[in-house]
Length: 356
Image 1 (tube, rainbow, N blue to C red):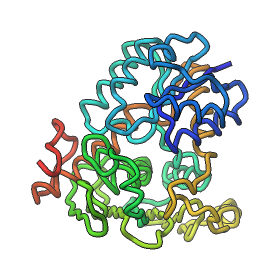
Image 2: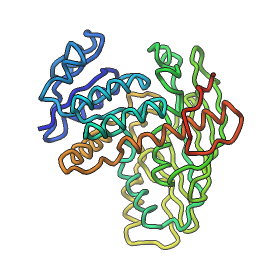
Image 3: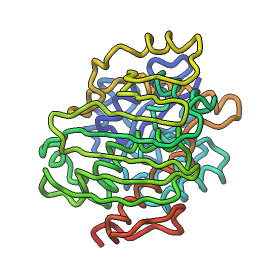
Image 4: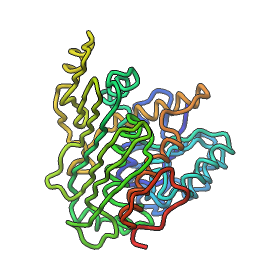
């Protein structure tokens, strides 16, 4: 039995708790929140124990893995402490808000010999898994274009609901770092590393935030392909996220978890079945207008993958190094906006904050 402890009990922790409840061999032991009333409310809904301190949670021998769901810029020290306590570590996206902080988490887990994963549940969508297999099988020929679009809506009340929201220190960024990071991760998974980026960003529809609510970026991938990324929380009423891949022998478009296009120069027997399987439109909304309107199925499948890695000694699909990649690209996007110049990757160090 794998016991889980959850640190931070905001909205996303409900998805972790619901996912854990559906996994055989997993159990929620308890949670910690620096506000005891919030921890008490969480365990009243999900069960387990409300720990009085982080140290108490990490000292509990029943807990083998810790899910860290605090604000993005407050994860490094907790993750390092968990690793040093011998706990396997799950960190919500983004892994952290700077490369140095990401590296500190990765290094601590390596040193302690514990597993680390970054939550990127979109990789576990069946449609995205099929798309990744088509890429790996070479069905696109030479990849030429990889594009992703996250045109969502968040109200001013959303940003006003927490003092950390919309700050570079704790949020790390805006529409790219928080909402579109899943699709940034997907594009890197499908297309490979990015070697250069040029971007512009703006804050167009919200007040009292430091970060962008609208941004566009053009990228060149290491394989020579080009791409575009768009991210917004200023597109009412909020549209389903979309990823498009194109090559010399095929094209595919995934909208949320449905296929809008699946066409290849050489048809296989499986293609008709794939189109039929993923033809149904999304009925949940994928968080386009409401961050609570997502399924916890992706979290469940990713935590299953994480536990499998623990049990077998393998690596989770999205380990810390994979989680770092999307943070690096987004920081490069912010640096391009800050300087007005094209930015090459990999970054040699953390760039200044965009408002520096």
